[in-house]
Structure formats: structure tokens, C-alpha cells
Length: 379
Image 1 (cartoon, rainbow, N blue to C red):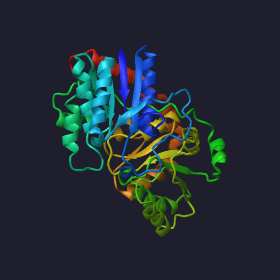
Image 2: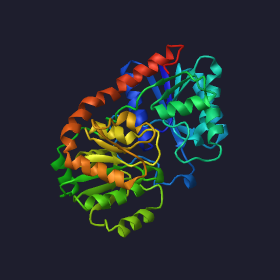
Image 3: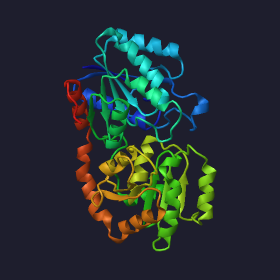
Image 4: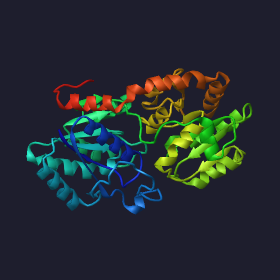
């Protein structure tokens, strides 16, 4: 097939850009002809909580995508749609994670489909966002009304899709593993690289937002410290008030055992943080799925996660990690203590290494190809 991917892509940064690069590579590996288009303006500056939207790390073997899409300019949507309509790809793929993009994606898709040839696929990270806003359902219905096919990556997203669009033609395919951050390195080497001397190290990784539950993890760490000395690495840019968390760390007396790296991590440094950790902790208050789990699995790291959204579909309780009730610091503390007291790392690490093949890009592309050649749902 001739395929166009439209969405966040290098030279823009972040998990969606990484995902789209890996997706393009996997599709090209099946001999599809793939073209990627990205944003020249992804968010207005006043709506973007981070420091920059540009990638600062290395993206080896990933060429910059043409920056053509303006997310807030309807005239640009029409222009991009006409360009795609003229190029006549067999398939136009959007990665959908935020209703903010619904009007942009929906308009481009409608114009592009005007050639009577191009089909539209939405890969759904979220159907409805973690932090709800007025217009979410309206914008999503508008976008999805221009879709021919949908891929969902968790049962929670599947339910949301069928609520918005009951007759959707879709496939369920788990979020694939992020493989572009390199291979695991020895734990002691990674810790030496990061200057870590602690015996027990936990990792909270990714953009810090309220729904990700760092405010739940911090009191859990205080409780764990009554029994075991541990170090928590909080690694990622804050998309909320960092001072609130700094104060919580101080109020709980955790200054000596919580290390905060409050910046976006360049691609070439991601592996060191994951390789240095014993376990990755996802104390989410709400979620659909998390790409952090798929980074952890790339580095053969077990995960302790809240039982929200689709996290328990990927983190197999007792095998590749531990699932805990959300928003309960005591339960989270008990899970961390269990992980160390039962030496779960020794059994869960090899289980992750053997389990992660289920989340390959090959399986994901199988789902796309099957969906586009079929007239029936896999519900």
C-alpha cells in the first residue's frame, strides 16, 4: 500500500513522534511505501505546558518529516487535505490522542477522501482524554466520522470507541514495545553512569501530570522507607506545578531519597534510567494505556501499576509486575515492599523478556493489514 502518516513526528519530540517513527519503519519493512507529514504548529504556545516542542536528542536513521500542518488554521487543513487527495495514498493514518486535534484531523481526512480512493485509519491512544474538557465528544465524533478503520490498544479505549461510534470497523492490537531507545545495559553500569549508589532504585518516568499519580507515589515511598531504604527517580518534564511536588517531597521528609530530573530526557539517555532501576512504577489515577510500560518492557523491567484503564492488560499481575488499586498510597507501599521482600525481580525480569514478543510491531502491522483487507470487526 501507499501510506501517509499524519501526526507528531521528528523533528518534533515525544512519545507520539517515537511511535510514528517506529510505525513507519515497521510498515516499510512490509514493503509498504510510507510518507510521514508532521506539524509546523502542533499546539499554540500558550496551550503547550512544556519547554519546547522540538526534539533535542538523537533520532538515528529517522529523517525529519515535512512540517506542513497547522493545528489551528482551517485554511491550512483544507490545503493539506487537497495535497493528500492529489497524492492518492491508499491509506491515511492518524494517531489520535486528544480531541483538540479532532477538527484538524477530521477536516483533512474529509478533504483527502474526496478522491474516492484514500481510506482513513485512526490509531486510538485515547478516544476521550484523561482530563475532560467541553467539546471533547463533539470534536472526537467529528474526526471519527471521517474514519474508515480504527485500531484500539486497550479494552478501555475499545469501550470508548464503541460509545462514540457503535458501528466502527476496528481491531484490538496492544501498544507495541518502544525499541528505539537501545538495548538494556548492566544495572551497575547504568547506576555508575547516573551517579547512583543506592541498593534499591524505583523509577517514575515521563511527563508529570496529575492523572499520573506522583502525588500518590510520594507518601507510599515514605511508608516504604520505614522498612526499607529505597531511592525514587522522578524523571520527566513537569506539565503541572513542579513547586507543589517539591513541597510534598519536603513535607514528607523525602529530600534525601527522591531524585528529580525535571527535564525532557533525550533519546540517548532514556536507557540509562530504565537500566538503573529495579522496577518501574506507574501509580496512575486514571489511564487508558501507557507507553511507559512499553519502554519498561524494552529494557526487561517489571512494572508496578495501578488497576486503571488497560494497564492490567499488559502488566500481568504476579508475572510481569504487580497491579494495585488506584489512589491508595498504602496499597502501593505494600506492593513495593512485596516486590523486594519476595525478590520479584529475579522471576519477573525473565518473564518480561519472554512476554514482550507479544507486543511486537510485526503483530501490530498484522492487525492493520488484516483490518484494511476485511469487512468484519474483531470485537
